Length: 487
Ligand SMILES: [Fe+2]
Image 1: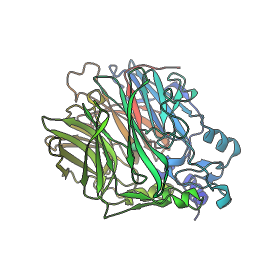
Image 2 (image 1 turned 120 degrees about the vertical axis):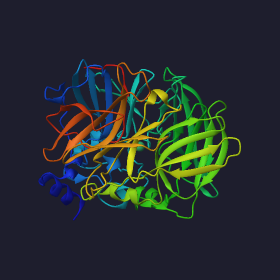
Image 3 (image 1 turned 90 degrees about the horizontal axis):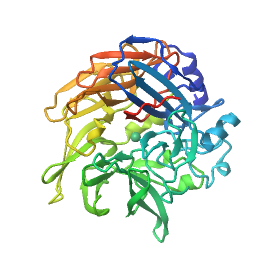
C-alpha cells in the first residue's frame, strides 16, 4: 500500500491513534469554553507549540514526519481561562505545496514525484516545523535544516526569515534546540553546516552560537568535522555546551544526485563510538573531546556542573530502529522511545561514565524547569508508554526524581496520547519542582484534542483540561513563557 492509500485508510478509520497525524488546515483563534475540572488561576503565560500541521499536500503524502509544514499553536493561560490559536508558518514550502495541492519541494524523507531529474541537486526545503521559542523579543519557529522564521507572538503572523543580523544566511542553519542561559539571558544554539569540498570529499562543521539577551549575535565558534554528523540537540551547563555526535553516517552522494532522500542515506554504524565535544562558553573553544560506546542520542534533558564533574541526562538508544517509523506515520503500530541515561564527565581528567536509569521505561521529549537551565535540578519530566501498552503514541506522563530514582507516572486517559509535556511554574512557586505539566493530548475516540494541566510532581493529579472542538496534530517541541500573548 502506498503512502496515499495509507493516508486514506487512516482518515476513514475510527478511534485510531494515527488519526492524530491527520491535517488541521483550519486556523482557529478563541477562548476555550468547554473545560473539565478547573484551570488553575495562578497559571499565567503562553505555551507555544510547533509541529507538522499536515502530513499531506492535496492527495500526496509526505514521506517523513519531519517534512510536514510547521503549524504553531499559542495556548494562553490567564485567570483560569485558556485561549487557543493556531497558524501555519508561511514558508515558501508551505505556500507552494498548499497552493499547488501537491508536494513541490524535497524534504528530509520526501522526494518530489517525477523522477531523478526533478530531485537532482535540489536542496531540502525548510518546513519550520520543529521548535519554537521566545527570546530577545522574537518568537521564532525553528527547523534544523534552515533558518528560523519570525512570528508575531500575538497573532502568529509570519514576519519572515530571521537571520540574527549576519549570523545566518540561506546556507547556514540553526538548530531547533537553542537553550536560554538563566544568568545571562543569552540563547546558546548551534548549526551543522557544509564547510566546503576538499580532496577527501565534503567538509562539514559544527557552528556554536551565543546570541545575547537582545537577540543579537554575541560570539561563536566553528568546529570542523570529518563527516556530516547527526547532532540534533545539546546539553547546556553554566559554562559548557556538550555535543554528542551519534554513531550515524550519511551517504550524501545519493541525496545530492536526486537518487534518494537524506533519511534513506542514514545508517547506524555499530562500530562507531559516540564522539563527545565539550565547548567552553567562556572562551568559545573546544575544551575536551572524548568517546562513548556506540549509540544514537536525540534529545538532552538538563545538565549541571559539580566541583569537578559535568552531569548530563539524555535519551539514548543502541541503534537507529527508533527512526524507522518516522517515514511511515500512517502505518506505525507503536512509536519508539529511548532510554534515559546519565553521563558524568570528569572535567579535570576527561573520563566519562554513562549509566542508564533503572526505570524500565522507553520515553522521549525530556522537560524540566527551564528557569534552571544548566543548574542543578533533580526532576526530569518525559512522556513514555504504559508498561502494558503495545500500540500507539506516548500515553504516559513521567515525573522522575533523578537523585533518588523515584518515579511518578500517570496515564493521560483512555484512548488518549500525548507528545512533549512542558513544565510551567506555579504562581507562588517556592521550589524549583513546584509547577504544572502542560500537555496537548489527542483523544483518539473523539478525534479531538485537549490541553491538560497536571501536577508536575504527581501527574496523576489533573487540575483541569481545556477541551478543544478540533484536534491538534501530534507535534514536536514547545516553549512556555510567563508572558501573556493574545491577539
Ligand atoms: Fe527535537
